[in-house]
Image (tube, rainbow, N blue to C red; front, side, top):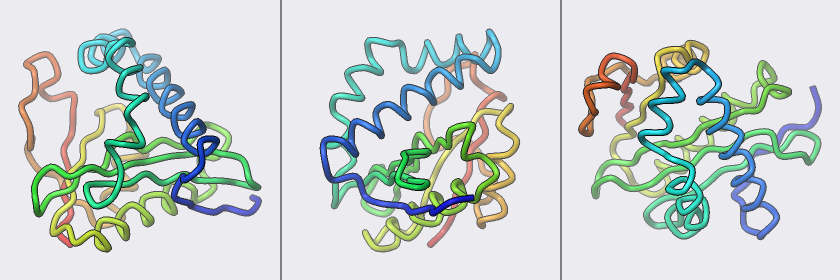
Length: 170
């Protein structure tokens, strides 16, 4: 399976790898179905997503968040990030493991690092969402102690019932 490490991206090359993985994730979600593509394009049209990718390192920096990068044999295979929603609440975003690394434990290791990082920053609760078709992600989150909950932010009517929400108390 190779050597798996989770790091905090701190070089331009690491941050570029996170951006690349985020774009892969964007494409992955769009490819799930025409309906998923419509939802992704509504929340994150390409121009808006590109601007977000440019601000990634600034918006996900301590004390208000952080990023994690999964490396297998030194190659970037996954990413995830956290940002502050309130003094007590963190949100985990863009957890993605590329196809080659799925089933290797990279997702579990990545989520473990994100949860631990939230504890280290003093958050009391983690919130996150995922899409209904991502059943493996849902299993991972519940296995790790996340519990289903209702929306923690406004959801456009088109996405109601298609997004699933989770929380973990720390």
